[in-house]
Image (cartoon, rainbow, N blue to C red; front, side, top):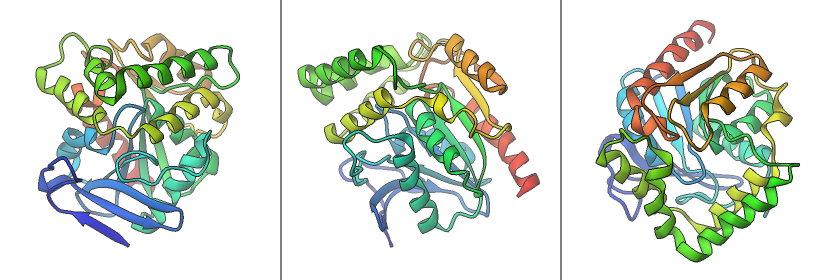
Length: 284
């Protein structure tokens, strides 16, 4: 069952082409935005401080060639939080599989940005035959099993307690975007972060601090691709390049972009998705 909000996701207005919907699954509601049509689908997974609407400009560029689905991860937007207080990537992946079931997606390309890439690793673990390829953009590697996990967790929870959602959102553009970013890009980053739900954010922090993308290294197919903004200070290019090297995967920089490269350089990201989708169409 799908409930649509033609002109808003309550409370923020949205352009008609990228409308907000709530999909009912056996494990709770999942909020999403989608546009386009056709047998080929790209599924877009946002990071820890963002949401479905952050993919708007990429969706605009892709909508004539494929169905574009951008979810609000569990605990974000109107998506039901996970039952686990300290979820792992596979817990998010199970919800994503429920969504694919409800939408009737037979085959798709999955794009994960930052923590969305860690969530995508849980889906790779499932070896779901519907997923033909993964694109990982500035992947968050996770701190599971490291001494830094407690420090990162405490720091993020303290920032939420001291600054609140608004304070975090206002500080994000300087961290997520390059010095070349436009004011519109900066406003988009802040606007998306302003929609954070504290409970869902806390669960996402637990994922970041409790899981490790390298646990799923053998599960990613060899056609997986890794990208990173050349001015990314959150997951630096060297880190993403090393990750790709260890997994034996191709790596490429996104020029003139910080961490949120798909907001800052949507055309570059859309082109990469188009290229990957051409390959998916060839094997679908």
